[in-house]
Length: 422
Figure 1 (cartoon, rainbow, N blue to C red):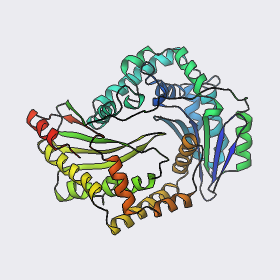
Figure 2 (tube, rainbow, N blue to C red):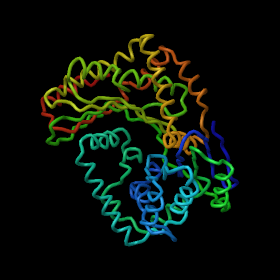
Figure 3 (cartoon, rainbow, N blue to C red):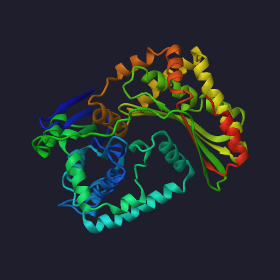
Figure 4 (cartoon, one colour):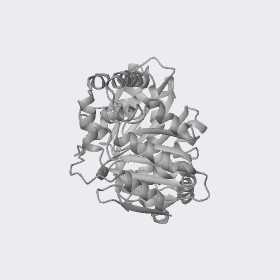
C-alpha cells in the first residue's frame, strides 16, 4: 500500500512501506528530460545529471560517494525523454541520510567550472562509445527518422558540438527553470517510518512555490510514408530496427498494446523469438518494446541478424507483424500474455528499488500512481479484438521507419525496399 502527499509548493511525495525488507530506496524525480531541449541545448539534462555528482556547496564529490557507499548503499541517476531521476538504495537505518544526500545534490549543486570542463570531455567520450555500438547507433538513426527536427528524435546524451559549448551559466539557468518543487516528485519505498520521512522532506523542501512553465514541443503529426535508412558499418552482423509511431501512455488501448508487445516480441515465448530464432535460426537476439510519452509513443522491433540473411529476416518480421493486424491472437496466447504481464509487475514490486522506480515514474509523469488492482483489471479486460484493433492503429503502412547498421549491399537494399510494406 502506498500513500501520496503534496506540499503547498507543489512537491509530490509517494511512500510505500515494505516492513519485511531490510533496505530503503529513495528517488528524487525531476519532470525534465531530453524532449524539453531545443537543438542548441540538446544534452543539457544529461550533462546536469552528471554534474550533480561532482559536489555541492557543503560536500565534495568524494564525500557524496563515501557517505552512501560507506554504509553499504549505492546511488545513481538517469535521464529520460521526459524525466530525470536521482536515486539511492541503502540499509533502512540510513533512509534519512539518503534523502539528505539526494536533496543536497539537487538543491545545492556546486557546478564547479573546472569539473564542468572535465565532465564535458567525459560525455563526449560517452557519445563516441555509443556511436561505436551498432545496437545503440541504430536506435539513434531510427529516432531521427521517426521524429525529424524534434527533440524526441535527438540523442539524450546530446551531440559533441552542443555539449562542448555549454557554459556554467547555461546549467544554472536550466536548473533554476526546471529544478523546483512544483516539478519534482519524491518516492520512498522499503522499511520506513512514514511520518519521520515526511517530516524530513517538509523541513528540506520548505521553499515557497515558484511560478513557471515546464513546457516541451508537442508532436503534432507523424511522418507519412515509409522511412528507410541504411548506415554502412563493417560489422559482423547487421542491426535492424523497425519503428512505428504508437499511442500515448494513458490511451484506452494501452493495456492491449502491452499485451500485443508480449505476444509479438516481449519474451522467449513470443512469436518473433520462436519464429526467427528457434525455428529459422536467423538471429541470436530479437525483441520488441514499447515507449510511451505524454501524447505519442513508439513501438519498435530490434534484431541482430546475419549479414547474408538480412532481407530474409526482415521479411519474416514483416510477416509476423502483418499477422497481428490480420488475425486474432489465440485464447492461449492471450491468457499467457496476461499472466506474464501480471507476474512481471508482481516480481518488480518485490524489490524496494524497482518499486520506487515504478511509483516515482508514475508520479512525475502522470501525477498519480494506479493501484495494482486497477492495472490487473485493465489487463484482464483486454480482448483479442482489442489487440487486433491496436495492431491496426500502430502497424500502419504510412507509419513505419526502418534503420540498419551494417554492411548491407545495394542488391540487399533493393530487396528490402520492396518487402517493407506492412
